[in-house]
Length: 86
Image 1 (cartoon, helix red, strand yellow):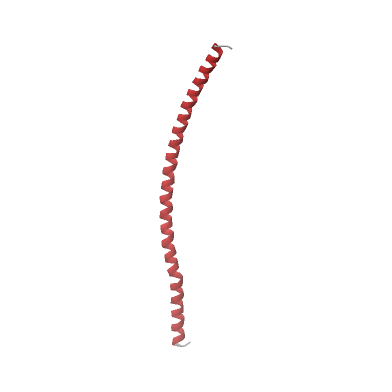
Image 2 (cartoon, one colour):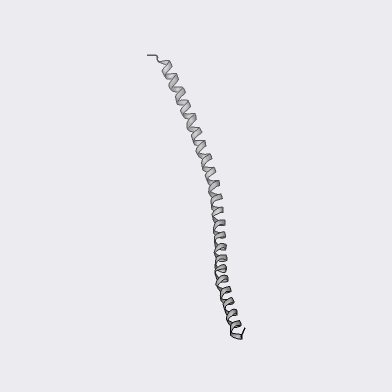
């Protein structure tokens, strides 16, 4: 092998290394940004889940209040219907 063959091989290897390493560095940066975005989304979702549970509890409370009111009205209607026979 002469000197130019060695130089050509070294340049080729450096080019190949640069061709492989540059996308890997970019990919690593992209993965880091995506990891940060996923962490933010996890925090947002956990906050939404807590708010969702709270909202559901309030809704069930209102449903139970309305159920009590409807039962009271049903009882009153039954009393009125039985009091005035036709």
